[in-house]
Amino acid sequence: MIRSYNPIEAKDVTLDQGDRAIFLKVKAKQKDLFQNFPYLTAMDEVRKEVRKEKAALINRQNYAAYCFRDIHYPKVTAEEYFRWIQQNARACGFPLRITEANKDIIKALALYFSKDYRAEGYGLDLEKGLIIFGGIGCGKTYTMKAVRTNPSAAFLLVPCSDISDAYTQDGVEALEKYATPAKGRPNPFNGDTQYGWCYDDLGTEETSSNYGNRRNVMAEVIQKAYNRPDLKGRIHITTNLDPDQIEAIYGPRVRSRMREMFNQLAFPDEIGDLRK
Image (tube, rainbow, N blue to C red; front, side, top):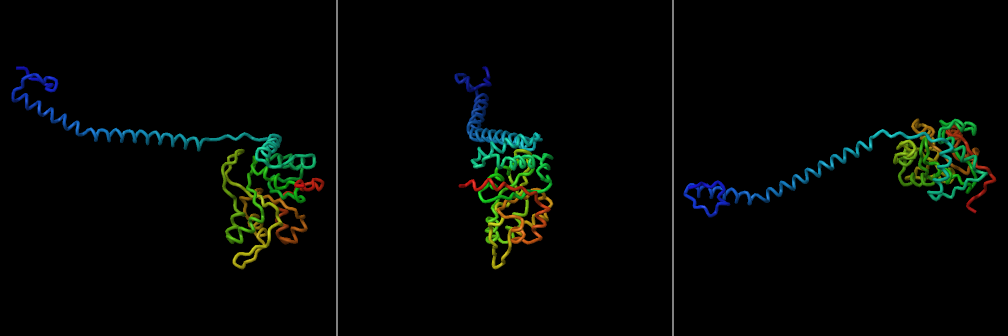
């Protein structure tokens, strides 16, 4: 009699007692196997999750390598930056019109912010910030908005009245905030994430009070910024005031420090109020 080692396929074969024992043993193992299918399915799911996690890890590693790669920023000339100012103003909707009256100012700013030593021909020290003088509506704010992203040191523009209001609400913390470098997304020209400040419309703020403590807010902010080496050349101001009015409002100490901190640029009187 032939003993079958594949009893499932040899169903018609007559089995003796020994063969029957082997057959039943194999059937039992098969039953156990089928009962364990849920376990095998779960293992497949685990393998899928492991593969997903591995793929995600590889993606994270590749992204980290991309983020920390060496980026080489090309040097931007003053002429290229001048064209960029024009295009950026139009793209952002700034009503900045470059005319014969303000063209020299925009050229000077293009030279200054591209660290071109020809800026010295306009009386600009590349290590100092800027104070922009001009009448109401001559375009000071829009001009500084157009150049706040630049190849040397980007800055954020904040109205002085907002700083005064922030002191009323937050106290001394507001003074510290606006006399400390700000953080922002990387400058597209050089990748720098540290930003300076432009205090817009100096002289329009009011003397502020916080819990009864009245302070000349901008005088204190300017003096705090003066004492920050990391803000050297990164602070700018626009104002309708003349130097004598600045001294009368903020005191001779502040005016003296401002002479050390800022280059002076003035919009010509003939520009007039462009808002008319």
